[in-house]
Amino acid sequence: MFLKNLILCILLLSAIATSSSALAITDTDSDNNPISTKMYITDVFEVTMRSGTSTSNEILMLLKSGQAVTLLEQDSVSQYSLVKAENGKQGYVLSRYLVDKPSAKQRLASLQQATAAQKQENQSLKTEISILQTDLANQLLNNENLKNSLQTSEDELERVSLAAKSTLEVMEKNRVMESTITELQQQQSLLSDENDILKDSTRMDWFIRGAAVSLLAFLIGILVTRIRWKKQESWGAY
Image 1 (tube, rainbow, N blue to C red):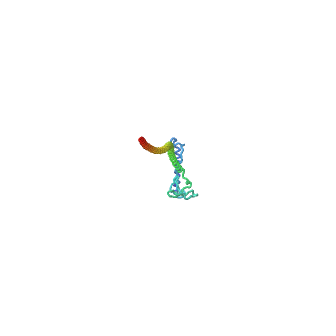
Image 2: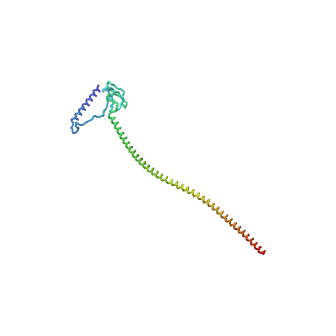
Image 3: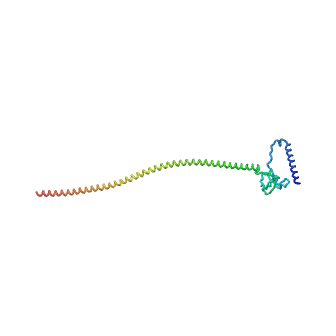
């Protein structure tokens, strides 16, 4: 009972102090704290966790706004719920202070973190896109250079093909000429052989003719000699 009265006194003193502060703000000079200044309620809030389902029970600890707890049971009559804090302590808090979602401050902080992470990821993606664009430009330039090199190679190949074709034609002509020369050489050899044969035949003919002439001269000489002897004999008979 004494504790309950003490708490009521504290609450009354707090209310009086709050009223006095409000009056002091109202009476302050307009140059320092204008009456029309817009103010906001702080989002710092603490919930008492008690040992029982009444304000007369002992305060075990203060739970800050957004702190996670585990719901164990609910009392619809007293509007209190038994919860378990992260440090393992159990106690009762008013059910109206429990929500199934994080506080707006925590969700805002999470959204801000997610937004910052998304911005960082976007920046990374932009950097990556810039690098890819640079690589693409380099690839396009390399492709253009390769196309030029390929065109040059094709032109050179065409020139080489023409030169090879000309070389083949020249080689074919040389082969034909070599074949012709070989045939001519063979014909020359045959002609040389024939000339040699003809020379030998001519020599033989001249030899035979010479021999025949010599034989004929010899025979004529013999005949002439005999005729002379016959004439001499006939002259001696007279």
